[in-house]
Length: 358
Image 1 (cartoon, rainbow, N blue to C red):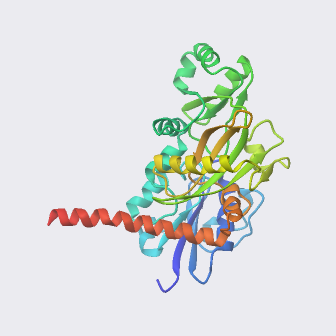
Image 2: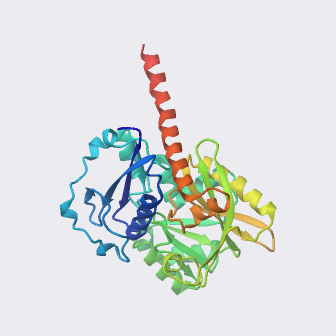
Image 3: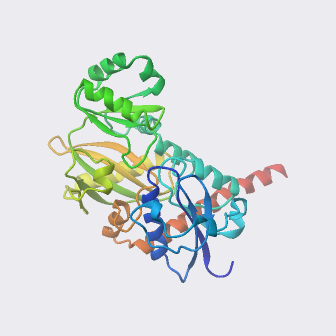
C-alpha cells in the first residue's frame, strides 16, 4: 500500500443524523495529513446503499442535495476492506453506526477501526444498559426507570402513576437507543408525560424516564485506550428549555464555553469520573461524557456517555481537546494510532490461542 496509510471513512447512514455524519466526514477529509494518509470515502445513503469514490461535492445544507449521482460510483467490496485499507474511521452517528452493529461487521472483516468496539458501542447507545453499568461502577447519577413499548400500550395510566410517584415531575423521557437528542421531551404534567412517552416510543421499543436534575450541563472529552486521558471541561448554555436536536444543530441561541467557568475541583472530579465511566463500559479511542453539576450543593451527576460524538472542528469533543492543546489534525492522527494499537493488542489473543494449540 506504499508509505501512506490508507484510511477508509464510512459516513452517511440510515439514521436521523445522516446529514451530521456528512459534515463530520467532510471535516476529517479536509483536515487529515495528506502526507501521511490516503483517504477512501465510503458513503452509505439513507436507503442503506453503499458507494465508494472520490469526494466531489462540498457539504450541502441538506443531505439530499448531494451534487453527484450515486450510480456513477461503484459499490465497495465490503469483504475486501481489510485488503484495501489500513484502518477504518467510522463516522455514522446513531443506530447502525455507533451501536455496535457496524463495529461487529468490521470485527468480522478483521480490519482496525477508530472508536469503541462492539460491547462499548452497544452499551453506550443503550441508555438503560449504560446506566446499569454506571450503577455497578458506583458512578453518581439520577434516578431512572425504563419501559418497553408493549408495556406502555398495555398500561399507560399505571406507568404514569409510577413515574409521578417515583421520579416526580418534571422529568425527561427519551428513547433508550437514539443519538443526538432525538425523541427527547421534558414532561411537566401528566398529559405531557403521556405525549412524551408516546413520542419516545416512536423511535425505539424501549423508553427511559429520568428524574429532573437542576444543574449546569457540563461535558468532557476522553481519549485513549486502556489508560485514557480527559480534556478540559466544556459547558453548553442554550436558549431552548433543554438541549434537544433543535438546540444542538439549528438554534442560534446555543453557546459553548470552553473551558467552562467552574472550580478546579469540579474539573478534577469530572476527569476522574469520566475516565472511570469510559473504562467501565470498555470504551476505546474516544468518548464524550456529559454531566449535571448542581452548583449550590456542589454535586456532580453523570448523565451519559457518547462513544461517537460530533467530530467537526466546531463540535464539543474536538474543541475541548483543542483547548487542552491538541489540534484537530493531531486528534485524528492519535485516534488512528489508538485504533491500530487496539487491533495489534487483540492479535495477542490469537498468538496465545495458537501457542495453546501446539
